[in-house]
Image (cartoon, rainbow, N blue to C red):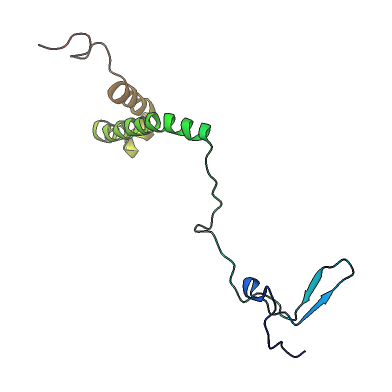
Length: 126
């Protein structure tokens, strides 16, 4: 086929050179080409992963739960920091192998929960 000297309508938008145009009985135009793919690269999304917009209910629930979840995360981080400071000996390898209950007792009684007999729990010291 000899390429057309004049551009046919639609060649610039799709990036495909048309070699021939034919008409059918129902008044539709058909465009024929020997080109395998478009010269224009497809427009890709900014991110490769699929993203969608959140609905108003989903956005409201996320806004309501975000602060409590962050506070819970902060409390867990503080508990882990105190656990590494207070119960360092109980969570060492020799102590864990010899007495498993000591590590659990230290975690529960020293870091997470205070007994009533400890000073400053029932009455504030003066």
